[in-house]
Image (cartoon, rainbow, N blue to C red; front, side, top):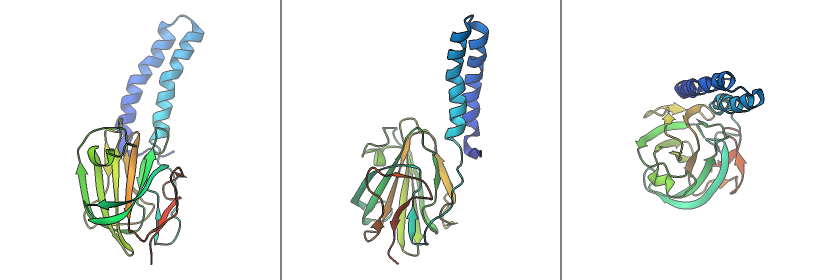
Length: 218
């Protein structure tokens, strides 16, 4: 299992907190059954944090006009919106909510070149709330592709206090390569051309790289 390189510090902190609790459970509790029950809780968190920050092996799917999911999670929004930060026009928004048990590593949704990147400090509202897209801490990444402009946001949630994005201006990226990570529950908003053929519906569970979100017109 590969662990994301930007998460070693978080894992170390969790283990530093949990290991003494495990030892204390066995040393200070005279009743074996109770000591084992109490030790299970920190042991669970030690294992869970490794599971949470793992980097899955994913393969790209579809032709080069196919947009795949940036993240694992559940589709919570599909709607026509006016996007005024990068696209500056009407487009289709598809939002994927990542809960506590999803892989939180993110991947580029399509081949292209980075034309815009910005980090926005902000609040830490629940990520699935509509206002979270504008008010929460988030990053914005705009891409030029052969089939039009694609724009997406990594949005922090209540517990997500760090967003990592590897985008740099003029950087050429390939679909299914890692683009960053959001630590703990969060959301991805992706904005696509109006004529994109959406391949998901609200309530669908999607996997980064492997689930097709849309096909762009050739």
